Structure formats: C-alpha cells, structure tokens
Image 1 (cartoon, helix red, strand yellow):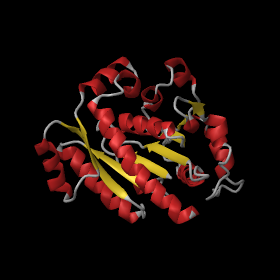
Image 2: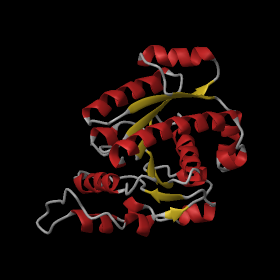
Image 3: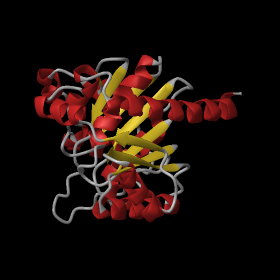
Image 4: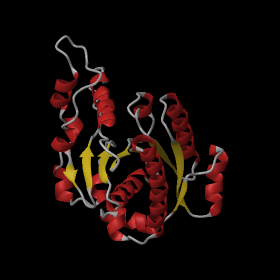
Length: 264
C-alpha cells in the first residue's frame, strides 16, 4: 500500500510520516519511507543517526543515473523507466524495519523539460509495492506542484495534514480537488496541532467533512524537533504519539480490507 502525506509547509507532515513509518514497521510491515521534500528532514525524524542521514545518497542529485533510465538517444523519454533496483541502490536502513529513500528536489535547470524526472518518479511510485506486508510512506513536498504534475498517481491513500489556519485549510482544499483530478483512491484530512475542540470545529467547518483523525498540539513535538531527535525516541508516550497510534490503527484497517480484496 502506498500512503502519501501532503499539506502546506510546516503543518507537521514529516513528524507524522516518520511516526507512522516506524509504528507500521513495529507491526512487522516492510516499510519504505520516501523523503520527497527538498528539506530532507525525514531521516532525522525517523531516528537515523545524523552522520548516516547526511551521507545518505539523494536520488535526484544523481541526474545522470535518472536520465540514463529515462531518455532515448533521439531525445524522447521513456514513460516506464527501469526502477526495480532503486531501493537497493539508494535505500538507507533505519529503525523498526524502515528503509529510507531520499528523493531531494527535482531540479529545474532553467527551462529544461522536467518530464524525465517526473516520469521516473511516477514509475518508482508504481513499482515500490511488492506484497501484502509492504507499505510505502511518502513525505511529499509542500504545496501543489507534485500533484499538478501527476507525480502522486498510484497512491492508495492520501493523508492531508491540516492545522487550524486559513492558509493550511486553503491548501488542503486545493489538494483535495487535485486528488480527484488524478484519481487518488482515498483522500482523508488529518487535523494536527489541535489545542481545543473549537480548533477542530474550525477545520471541519471549512472542509465540510469530518477529519480522519485529530492530533493534539504537543510540546514534545517542538522539543524533539529542536533537539533533532525522533519523537518516538524522545517521548514515546506523548499525546501526539498516542494520536498517531490511533491513526495507524485506522490505516491498518484500510490495509487489511485492501489486502483481502486483492489477495483473498
């Protein structure tokens, strides 16, 4: 199953993605955590030691590798490039049965067409699932470009993280609309940084639906981030972690139903 974590910058995508990845790994799922955000903070949030995190290869820095897989000699590009060795070549082992791949940023290169990079991205997303115990968690770049270019096609579940601010809600609503355009199978809103019930009511009023899960504002998240420590290692019983555990349980219900439908 492929799960994309999206939302406006700063809403808490990376912390939630990292916690979900490790919690699913503890449940004996083989988890690939993909850092598709240019800030590349997912490694630290997962609890991968800094010296290893900083040395980990960044996929989109390997321009020659990508273009060798996507471009033909006549300048045309391959829609379904070979990607089956990417995890082995670029994956970094993390805690709790999680493997990290750092995408980095798709380079703009002036006016050069970015079709090869996005074709590679789409192919990789399509290839990454192998069996019923495999889960991919994608910590997506903030904003809308990855969706408008169709890079998120093939996602089974998109979790849009939204905090109780007008800007975060506006971005979330745009993402919801785009998710329909690219046929995302399931899209859910997750309320984050909720201090009081009225915060959640504010979000639900504007999105005009119930949120999938509510994650409270938690000082432990701020403290762990400041120290560069995984929230699960810093405060494993914090209110935010408890809420993310509930979110994980709801996701597993979806995974089990999906697997029953596919595998019987």
